[in-house]
Image (cartoon, rainbow, N blue to C red):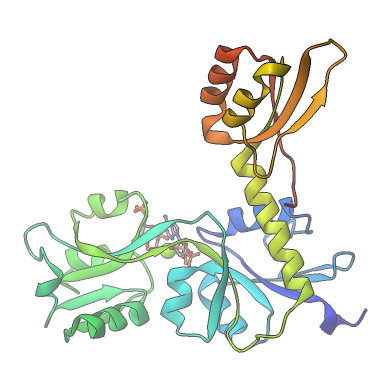
Length: 287
Ligand SMILES: Nc1ncnc2c1ncn2[C@@H]1O[C@H](COP(=O)(O)OP(=O)(O)OP(=O)(O)O)[C@@H](O)[C@H]1O
Ligand SMILES: O=P(O)(O)OC[C@H]1O[C@H](OP(=O)(O)OP(=O)(O)O)[C@H](O)[C@@H]1O
Ligand SMILES: [Mg+2]
């Protein structure tokens, strides 16, 4: 197969999204790089090429159509202004993008006019200021923007907040509503509207990984007259599998259960008479 028919995927080469991106692709059955100096990985069997790029650059490559899809943060995508769009949310790398200042200095976004705002995301901040109708000076920094206030470079920062620890350590406090809720997303060029079977396969595989993480498989035995009550507790995604047991009057039920409610459901099943309740991990799935 010619190189051009391979799916070309942009992967974060370092930073907060790199490990989880590698893990989800590995679990989806693709060959990922084994060491940090590999820039391109060709998985000839799966007809996929992975290009390891700076997360901030990924939307640029994908937006211009040089790569078919990429994994990046929603905040980085929007900041870039690149003509790329979200295909699916990936469920990791969650953060908010927020304004912060010394407590008491600035307490509301209504006070942003005329301020100096330090950020690594000037595109996002300029758009937010324009939406809010304020004029302010945007000071673009590469990182560690929290220190810009301490050093007198800015009055306000706008930055990624995950746990809030970095802000607290810098003696800053958030104000106003979050500018954005972000997470890792799969993106594709905005222009490309024709269907792509290879992208569809990637999306289905990634959705399969997400489902396998969200659910466990539950098996149990129950008296046949109680099966309706039991199935109401474990309705599964489509319908539970009910099989006859050798022991007369009993059936075995198998159903997918949300991971977070595993123990509650087991308690409820036991309560109504289910026994031999077993929970197993789902390694992969395609719904
Ligand atoms: N705790 C976090 N710190 C930074 N970025 C995070 C965090 N949690 C999630 N993210 C997301 O990760 C992306 C930033 O990734 P990127 O690799 O550019 O940042 P980084 O971890 O700051 O790396 P570097 O500082 O080396 O550039 C953004 O989409 C951001 O929302
Ligand atoms: O709310 P928290 O959990 O503290 O995480 C948010 C911090 O992490 C990131 O910084 P990073 O470590 O990437 O350094 P950088 O600012 O140099 O990019 C981000 O820019 C914030 O500073
Ligand atoms: Mg950073």
